[in-house]
Length: 189
Image 1: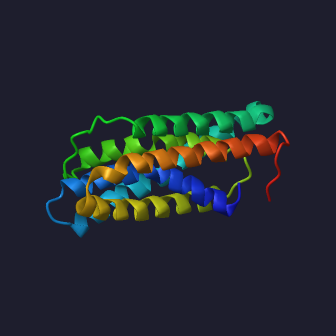
Image 2 (image 1 turned 90 degrees about the horizontal axis):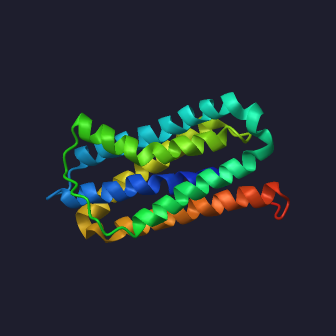
Image 3 (image 1 turned 45 degrees about the vertical axis):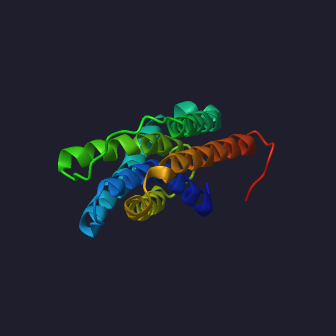
């Protein structure tokens, strides 16, 4: 995986956090930059921590799965992407308030970063600088979450479903690219 692919993975992973941030912004009567920064810090931190956990779990089992690592990466990214696409079509608008207490934010941060754990597993299957990857993912998630709060506060929840749809498509394309490149149907570099 090269630098630009990591950026795209970061964008794809950040879409759940972006969508929830839009909802958080929507629930604010007036834009509160302190709350927006706290929300973004939670999401960015958890999106960075989860791939580390996944990476070290995956590195432990790498020797057992080297012959099928491309299939594992494809399947995990496709499942995460399809789930995000499915969620983007769900009209069940969750009641999200502007509270940022520890319990609320921990639950939201964990819920939006579970897919990053699975992506961390796929990172272990490739030669990748995990520290650079988690830095990029964390910064992208923080930035997009901050933007999401502002957009939500300004424009409402119309973008939430589109963000999840785009994130899902990005992850599926990256998974497909990994698979096709490994089996020799395409060559990127």
